[in-house]
Structures are given as structure tokens and as C-alpha cells.
Image 1 (cartoon, rainbow, N blue to C red):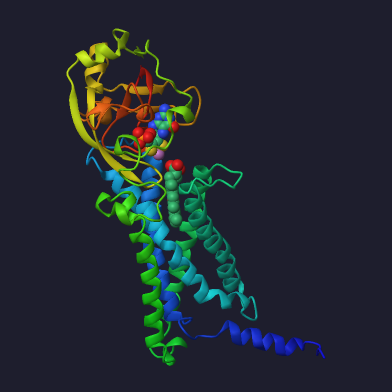
Image 2 (cartoon, protein in one colour):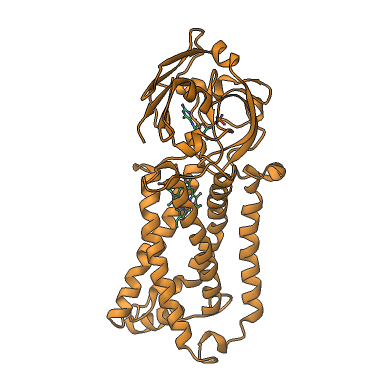
Length: 384
Ligand code: HEM
Ligand SMILES: Nc1nc2c(c(=O)[nH]1)N[C@H]1C(S)=C(S)[C@@H](COP(=O)(O)O)O[C@H]1N2
Ligand SMILES: [Mo]
């Protein structure tokens, strides 16, 4: 026999569930997890903006070409830190979700605002972590362009986070010692155990992905989609020559054109006849993986000086690849003037394999992988 539910009893039961504080569902646990999330989202926000503005320089700022591995470090921290945040966010949501059913749902205008903030905060945080994860796994079930959505959501999430933390901080400070409802309960050991489990889960995710950029731990990189040392010439490849529709052309020439004193058209033999230089530099993909190679070829600045360019010029490096979002990149003065910036012809002691950009690719220090244009066809110089 089913009894009709008694609304009053139902509400009391939900209220009891919503205020329940046991096994890590107490305020102090929520606060610790919140503080850790605050740190990890700050790292993600800052490193994410660095990545964005490196790829879209705002005009008033130009990025330095040194230290060589700076972007490798910031984007590695972004992606690996972001992945390690997933267990942290899940733990936080598990800790606080009973409060979604708190009764009465709204107590005051301030409380209504506080609750309205939960949507951009929780929704946005989940959105960032899920879209980020799908992006590095090459899984694109969403109809929007990942980078644009991820970029704008970052401001929403981080804005909501700052307001949330300020508000919670004010509440915690308002509580006198011993008056916090959570403090009255002996949740110490279980709280510590719970937090240790969460920290362990975060650490495990970090440990099994960090090898995608920290080569000595490459063997542990079970969860990462790319691994250093795995690919032609011991370097991973994102887009193959076949995928880009590029085929080796015996009549290939490099055109140097635009705002130059002399237009050039150089064959591979012409480039090999110029002074050759080697540089050990990483490909540091926006997706977080990175791997160093020993590149050799001609300095970009030597070619540009041969064509006659002014010191403040910018250079557009264009690929043989006919279409695609990443077929061209811009090089600013700090990068093209750097002695390590090469029009690379060789990788790890052999001519570039087709997948690494044969006959010629750009490699520059402290630059996202996506700007290291492969299969170069033209350099177009333009004003600063
Ligand atoms: C699992 C967690 C995360 C992963 C795997 C991840 C992954 C990525 C990737 C692959 C990019 C490069 C996109 C591109 O240039 O094509 C990126 C950029 C970015 N991420 Fe994340 N992310 C995560 C979490 C976050 C969080 C929590 C925030 C902010 C609070 C954030 C903010 C940004 C920003 C601002 C960019 C720059 C976007 C642009 O270039 O316009 N990310 N992220
Ligand atoms: N023309 C062209 N160059 C390109 C790309 C591309 O799609 N087309 N992909 C870029 C990206 S995203 C990365 S990470 C590096 C990878 O270089 P690798 O395949 O030699 O490791 O090449 C870059 N150069
Ligand atoms: Mo990349």
C-alpha cells in the first residue's frame, strides 16, 4: 500500500538532508576544497589568458622570445593543472550539492543573488573542464568553436568565482570560533581522510598526464593523447602532410615578398647554401603536450636581411597547405630577430619528414606550437 506523501514531512526531510554535515560534507571541508579550486582556477585563468594573448597580440604588448620554454611551462600548467582539477571540482560538488535543496529556497534578496551566482559558477566550471578535456582528446561533440567558447566562459567563471570567494570569506569571518555549525561536530578524522583521497585522485591524474610535457615521466603518461618521442623522427605530429593535403614538390621555392627591398625566390639548395644553424627547441602545443627536437636550418633573420626589411617589420609565414585554420602565422620582431628562430630544414639530424613540414618549417623559441608553421611556401613582410 502506498501512502500519499505528506508535503510537510517531505519538506522537513529535504531540509534535514540539505543541512546534513557528515563524512566530509561539512563547511570546513567545503572551504578547503574551495580554496584549492580558487588556486587552480587562478592558475588556469592566468595561463589561459597568456595563451590567448600570445596567439592574438593586443598591439600594445609583444611577447618575448625568451625564456625558450616559457610557453611550454604555462600551457603545460594550464592543461595538466586543469585535468588534475577535475576530481577536485567533483569532490566540491559532492560536498555541497545537498544545499541545492535547502529550504526555504530563498531567504532574502542577497540570498537570491548568492544562489543565482551558483549557475555561472558551477555550470561554467564544469563547462571549462569538460570542453578542455574533450578538446585535448580530439572529441568535438559540441556545435561551437572550442577556443572562442572556452575563452569567453573563462571570464564568466572567474568573475563568478571572485564574487563567490569574497562572499564566503566574509561569512567565515563573521562566524565566531565555536559557532560554526560544522565545528561542533567531530568530523576531523573523516574530513582528513576525505581530503587526502581527493588530493590523491588529483595527484594521480597529474602524474599520469605530466609526462606529455615533462619527458622524463613520458613512460607514465598513460592518460595523455600525445607522448614525447612517439612519432616520426621521435616527435609527435598533430596534422600529417596527408591530412593537410600537402605533397612533396621537387620544384618547391620559398618566396619572400611584401614590404621588402628585394623580392626573393629561394630553392632548397639556395637555403642549404646559406649559413646553417642548429637549435634545441620544443614544440609546445596549445593542447598541453610538448617535446623538444634538435632543429637545423637557416636563421629567419638572415633570410629577411637578405631581402632587406626594416627592424620593426612583421612577417606572415604562409604554408603550402591550401586551407585550414593554422596554415599561416605572424612573427613579430622579438621572434624573427632571435638567433634561435629558424627556417628549419632538418630535425634530429635528418631532413624534415613530410609530417614535420618538409621541405621547410618555422621553429621559434617561446611560441605556441600552433604558430610553428609547417610546409612554408611564402614569407610576406608587412609594416609594424
Ligand atoms: C580540464 C581543464 C582544462 C583543459 C584541459 C583546458 C584546455 C585548454 C586548451 C587545450 C586551450 C588551448 C585552446 C587553443 O588555443 O586552441 C585552453 C585555452 C584557454 N583556457 Fe583552458 N582548459 C581547462 C580549464 C580552464 C579553466 C578552468 C579556465 C579558466 C578559468 C581556462 C581558461 C582558458 C583560457 C582563457 C584559454 C585561452 C583561450 C584562447 O586562446 O582564446 N581553461 N584551455
Ligand atoms: N601549416 C600548418 N602548420 C602547422 C599546423 C597545421 O595544422 N598546419 N599545426 C600546428 C600545430 S597545432 C602544432 S602543435 C605543430 C606541431 O608540429 P609537429 O607536427 O612537427 O610536432 O605544428 C603547427 N604547424
Ligand atoms: Mo598544436
